[in-house]
Length: 315
Image 1 (cartoon, rainbow, N blue to C red):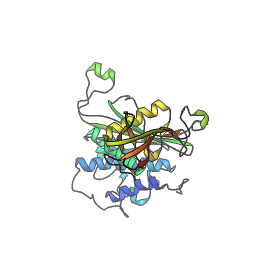
Image 2 (cartoon, rainbow, N blue to C red):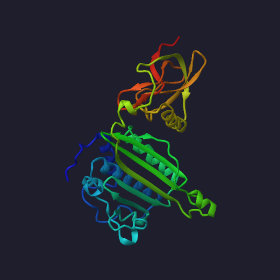
Image 3 (cartoon, helix red, strand yellow):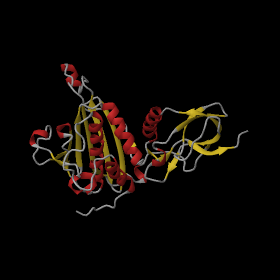
Image 4 (cartoon, helix red, strand yellow):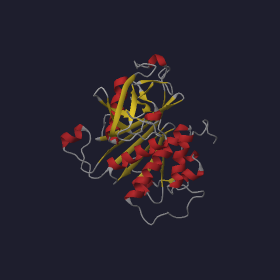
């Protein structure tokens, strides 16, 4: 099959990651690469399957169409391994090492799921999010409400006329699920993890200027000089990105999606969490000028956060 879209460098990094992680080989391995399945290997398998799903859907193909090095360890799941994938038309993949513990199911040309068990849910999801966003900063976190399982996260991005989402949902052992199950006193006896990767077309004009509700200045407005106090906790910064996106009605510029935030005390007395660029490394005591939220023209309906405009000479 010939891909209908050119390979994007950011997505190519995901496939490269599978090779570097030891799951990709020029030829299918004759035997498992490890003597037994460990928690770390299963977590790696979960991440790699999410990356494989995302890559294939971005390129209008299936897992079978992946580059050889990205699928060399995969095989069709045995009937006894398919578990929740009851529809015989659904292609289900696993490896000799993962068996029924990590499964990749292709539900449709635009949708696939990765299911795993016995892994720490929060830690695995946070690892997947960090690695996907490191490979492609245009993936941004979105607010999401758990539907059936109590732990939920979502990443999304828009490419051309399509929207791609990575929805992560799961439950730790003993965790309660849907409210009706809570009323019945049901709890999950073991950890369950589900990743749903989906491509959907954008409604006409959805990403256009007319549909964008942001009301931000086109040019940065100086908030004044200030002094760097320290670095903000990453989890606090990530949560603020989500709430700011909700408040302004747009998405953060990918160049600032996952960069460090520093706390800056302005000369006016106010303290702000300020975004930095990846190449910047402001230190406590540095004097900087801070500018306000502004429109970003890098992608539709996106914004530049409160950020450092430039470093100043010490007074």
